[in-house]
Length: 176
Image (cartoon, rainbow, N blue to C red; front, top):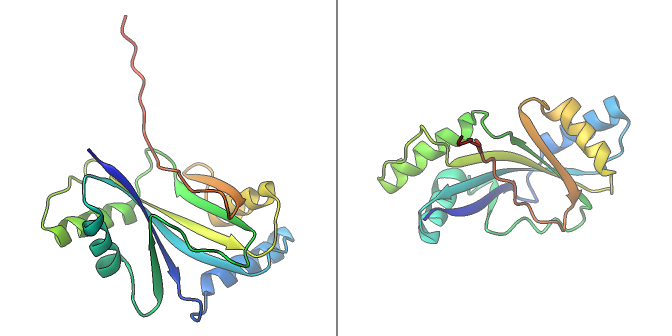
């Protein structure tokens, strides 16, 4: 039975977050939003029948750069000093090339075959914002500057809210 694991990669606090700085600058320049400091991170959602030990091995030896990044498995960055967050993920059915590459790497790491015809690892970008920016302003930032509403799903809210989004394609059939 497949399990769902959330893995977050985030730059260590002493490493300069150039991506976060770019988001802060763009929000101010183009949308006149004062976000305060922005911290960026990468999320991997793994939906496979593997053990917690295997997911930890994968996260710590394949995904994470131990010099620059901290890894959180099943928990998230504590986000102390940040008020809001914005998640940008692929919509269901949209190819996630980074997720497919991670799925291949997981198979290589565990010496197991995971079909790439069915996507089971999904990626997302997660941003933390120092100031309590309104939810609709964060969604606008995501849609206009960081993603594309046709291919991306956007979620914004307080840092205390859990992240549970998993792109899931469901096709309803009718029997007559």
